[in-house]
Image 1: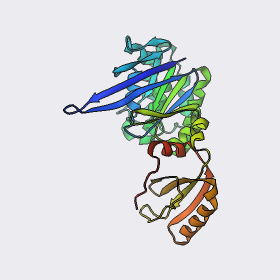
Image 2: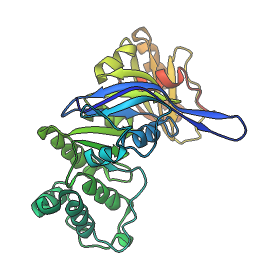
Image 3: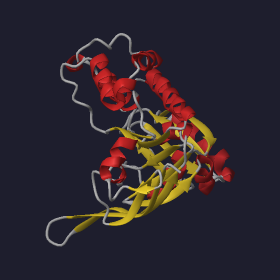
Image 4: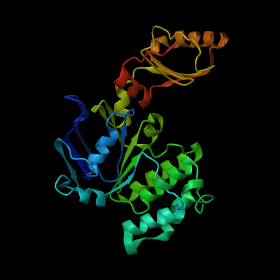
Length: 312
């Protein structure tokens, strides 16, 4: 077992006697060569959990074991075992991706640093056009990929990636997921911290959904989806973000993000939903729609908000 977390609780004190429970009695474990997804909205407690795993914060209760030893006694050991890509952008300044990644590789691997590994990463992520460009001139996506390479150039036995695909274009996102999967071939374990549920479903072996500091569900994607397995989802492209649309009464849960609207229903309501959607197309309220079985995103919405009201 690479990582075992038991009963982890972290509380932050606010003004007066107010307190925020950032992590509330969290327990989970990660096996060798496993990709573990940590899904949650901003403020759910994901980054607080990561900071305790790498020894930057001390839990108020509970314990964390890396490779069988508690990190509470020797937090610096955790940072030698873990490689981390932080959520924030790495300030590259005038360093080029080649300089930044090679410096990190030499710091972590010392005399065992292999420049060929760096070239392979750049090629796998199609970064050739940027590798000699100063950081201040790079796009957000290029800097994000550079930070990823810095984290995995000489990976520890546990790699923690906090929102690794932010600002990355769709093509290179696909390349990045393949590199992440390749990391596990030699036994490296990965914690993927993200709020992008659709991407995570395709990448992770197991997942935990965290909300307001608590785990709402934990298991394989199939196990998580089984909580809403007897449902069908419809994904709708609205004509415009402010389009006024009345969600049918049989919708079990709904969620809107810009012009993208999702809601789930019982299979018995599929025919009525198709009629409803066709009527909305005729009225010019929606551009198109598609029906599909439930996804982990549907389970995520169901678990975190039950039924989310869409603003009219």
